[in-house]
Amino acid sequence: MVIFLVFFPVSALSSEEPETQGFPFTIELPQRDVAGRDLPDVPRYTPSVRTSYERHTTDGTVYVEITYHTRDNPERVRNFYLKALPGHGWTLLKEESTPGMRYHGFGMGVSTNFEFVHKSCGAKRPCFPRLTLSIGSFSMGANRYTIIDVDYEALERAPLRRPPLRVDTTEEDTPSKRVVPPTGFGKALDRFLKGLFPRAGKPVLVSYSEMTLGETLTVNATYRFSSAVEDPSTVTGGIRDALIERGVSSSAVAVSVDQYGATVSTGGPVLTIGQRTVGVLLIELQRGSSKVNVAVTAM
Image (cartoon, rainbow, N blue to C red; front, top):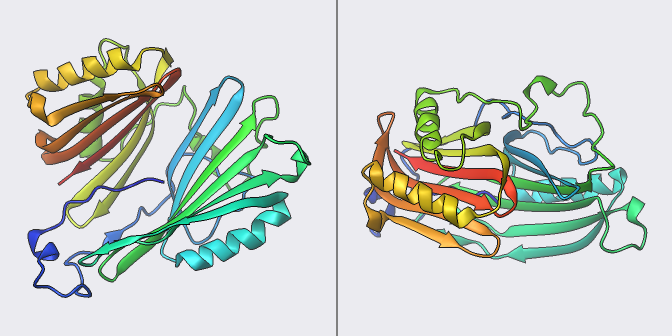
């Protein structure tokens, strides 16, 4: 699930204000889908907007990750998928829920995860294709929306069927497709990020989305290198050095490395890009993958 890191006005978190008091701004969802494709075998909940799309292949397996947002309540979304997915050949294997939280008008509702298996698998386990669905909610005062995360895995020798004609296939996200950020800040951020990767080769921006909550802008982007990263720790170490060279305090940059990959993160405000102050910068690399995930929160 995509988590948005948000800066709140001090007054909004004051203990003197009742929990039900509204925030002095509204949640604005994007007006159109980001580049990508809906899955032909997984019905899309409507009304919704596609806010994130990633597709890559590793060791013969195709991975597709899509995020949608809607203002409808999560129970309505849950009921839709439980009724619609069986008609597309999916059987529910597991349903698990995680408790939510609420703090002075800010809340994350109960998150529910579903695992489905396709009828073509029969009794075989494990089996492809596989589908994991996550439904959660986010609220700030009276403003709220529901997040739908779709994770799909299939064997490369059984590729996804071509989507319906109503989908705009000119915006397909492929490693060779270069994406241009739509805003001045996005273009400045893109230049800044590409400048952090000189030791690992210049990556290509293949996915970019922005979401505004009051004065806070949240960006999610995906870059791809020309080849897989086999040593993420070396790459993230170079990114850390590049951030420090650009004036970020070494105490504000953290590097985390494990068997799966490495992450570089900053806590701020630490720098200014395109007339905005960046509060959080998160760069994630996976071992053996060419993908680089970036999340930014700016004011």
